[in-house]
Picture 1 (cartoon, rainbow, N blue to C red):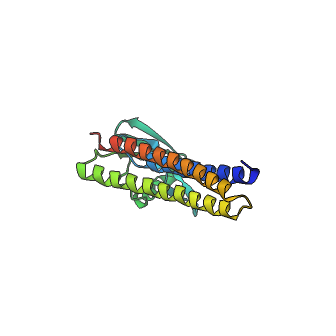
Picture 2: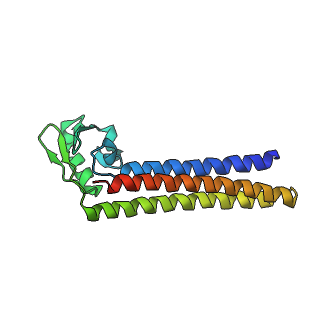
Length: 184
């Protein structure tokens, strides 16, 4: 295989790997009933006029399987952190005791589990679209190269094999997450 084709294959593999990594980050944000500090990963707090990630203004820990505690580094941030958690629309009701914020993670209802499963499926579909786009870009680049038609076919077959393997990984990741979500 010539260098140009190898470069195209490597760059499309890199794009596909990034799509898979993004999917795993999305899946970490979908809670499955157990409290985890990563649930608050997307919360932004107004810190002296700048939107700042919660992890940069407070410690987030799990007290037990159903409770998260947020210990701000500055006590005057407690109202801003509560506001940030509410604005993130995670379905949590933060309570403060003057020192820290306590969040009780409610048990998931059957209906909520189904909704979360749909969210996970949607994230998996977006990842598949990203992988297919990487395949399309790679095939377009292959068509532009100055190699024989037979070599182009071989390269496109390699890209398709790569695409199929990443799609399979996404399907496996989704199936695993779905089982985790639906488990009571």
